[in-house]
Image 1 (cartoon, helix red, strand yellow):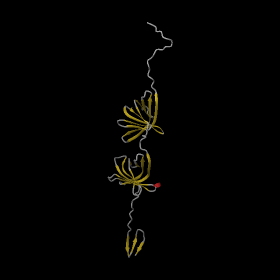
Image 2: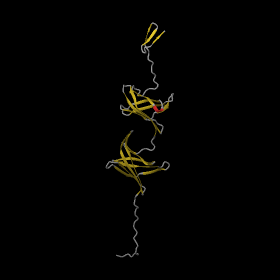
Image 3: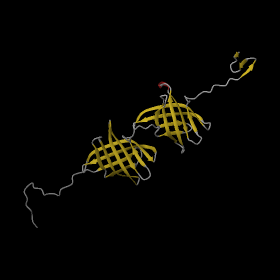
Image 4: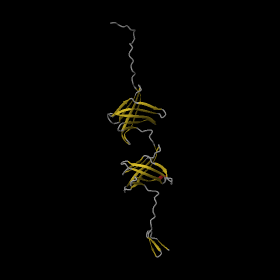
Length: 274
């Protein structure tokens, strides 16, 4: 046994300790969350997404569905890519939601304020949060409300028809009525020999697998434009919307009786003699 003599105030060296890991940067976004299966998208509520960048350079993400107890999912190991030209940051990784792994791509961009657009791809369906900043935007719309229509099967009603011009040069169309609805993803816009705007192409019913050939013409003064449109399946079912501006009204044949060099016009009650 021995006693070690040391100078007054001397402390024994200790093993180096790891620095405490803390949050370096945190971003949080709340926006609509939709469940997407194929071309069908259904809003499921609001979701809050929190992204944390730590001092040890790790990145974690938490997805919480607003108002649903226990619907909170967190994962780490995300990677970060910065696009300095567009001032955007992309985070990619995997998030386990209800025991299923989803491949996540989250884009943080600026549109006045910072916003999030996130897609989580699963095996059966996907989750989408926010608005895609690169999606085509509406340039203009041309709407006709309560336009009368008839069908070749003696159906009739009124419909709201809207033609939309998108920033990517496409022209979608919607036909909405109490009887059925029709959508066109991209019609061809043109001009006829009379200088009127035309739309042609194909459209589909939203309830059954039926495709129409669409021909539409917009006519009349700018302040009171009218629509004439036909939607033809090619199998006998035709939907006619509005009145044909080029329809030719047949001249009624006037019946008369020749009596002693004169004609009695029964239709007008007048008489011509020779």
